[in-house]
Image (cartoon, rainbow over all chains, first blue to last red; front, side):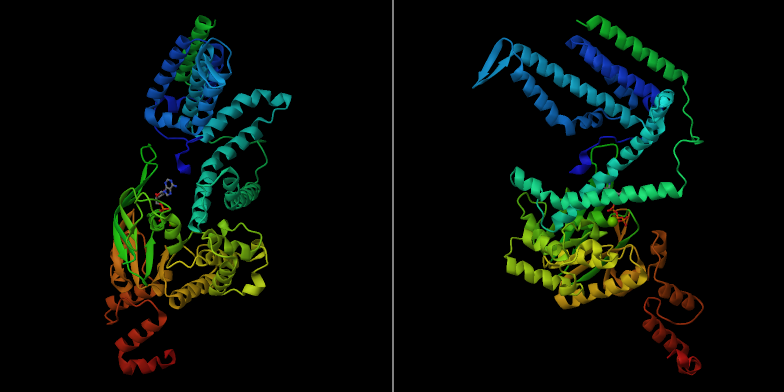
Length: 265
Length: 293
Ligand SMILES: Nc1ncnc2c1ncn2[C@@H]1O[C@H](COP(=O)(O)OP(=O)(O)OP(=O)(O)O)[C@@H](O)[C@H]1O
Ligand SMILES: [Mg+2]
């Protein structure tokens, strides 16, 4: 049940997208997100969808697998859709008791949902094709210039690495403790809201204890290996910007700027 | 006819690039009252297999039935199955969550909807069955106990459901040799006194050899060997190929045999080895080693 969640997961493979420098990918995704907020027409979103589709195809990952990353957020998407449909004033299309569906509501609801789906797909493609180490190396390098003004670039990147690293571990642990309690007759699936929340205690207590234990062990292990931040620290693999990176980034900038200028109403 | 597994195949993360088939066409039957060991290298599918036996994982391909109840059927009473088949996970102490030992042990029986008096009785019996002093530990916080004691409490938490089949996934992982021996001895006592079926999962040959009568050897999600312990130990080459060593005494007996001494190569306890070797050496020479006997 838990293992259908794929947030932050990396799928190793050989593809142009996998091999791009993480900074290129982070940059491109950031631009894409900005574009999603600036463009406000369906045609513009169509073009961006096409662009993202090409990137997904180039990554060599099965399209259906990439689409699965939407699953954990489906409820939020549906919620957004419904809220927008009912809460936007406009010409009434349909009356459902005290609620009214308006034309602008329908338009906004659909638009917001597509925006969310594209946001999720773009960021998922980033994590699916970039190993956590390269991802955080990228973040660290991007933040490096801001170190002078006191941004703890290395520490932020390290925290991100650790967080990403422990997502699957904690999910696995959740799955295991859940099963262990189910073996003792616990029921996590039925009951009303209050009952269900109460039933979570046997899961959450051991989970927190184990998370703290892991944190403690990790801190000790890092200290035992003389970790002291980024002072004098070098990297085993250096990030290098290659020609594909320049081309990919330029293409993204050109395409997205074009789309934004054209479809910004 | 207690547990029947037929052509069971299971794949994790099915339909994704990360799909991993953990079980391939596994079939076996475990009768009531058996003491079975499941052994295999890490990743061979042992944990996946046993989670099928109390319906924590539902069979996708193939069948699993317990006392004639098909665990793949849509409407199975899961609670009844889990009451019948108790599963102690690896590092079971990680599941302990209550403030006191007694309250934690009571979690299982309480989920079965028993009366307070019945729950209290079961808690007492279960803690006694794992060999701890009920009066001394009942009010203590689980986290004040030693690692070994805490594990016993976790096992008691499953025993308190009074299962007819007890499955233990690597119960001795992370214990020191003495704690390990004590725990194994307690598991043997439970088997003998409670008259239950016990399935012991391990990757340590020495450990299971002394305990069980029948051994199921897993290798890469398949059953490589299944039979009486002695029969299994005759297949030393095959075992070595799949990364499992026969017990040291079995290896010794084999070496002696290669050198021409007629000893049975399937011995695995010191006592058996002594008898075999003395018999093979003959009485005359045996006298020279008299101080051994
Ligand atoms: N939750 C999971 N998600 C994906 N793959 C899994 C999961 N659990 C186990 N596997 C994979 O299934 C295979 C069998 O795992 P399993 O835990 O059953 O082995 P095991 O014999 O119990 O090993 P160990 O001795 O290490 O406990 C392994 O290859 C493992 O990587
Ligand atoms: Mg296991």
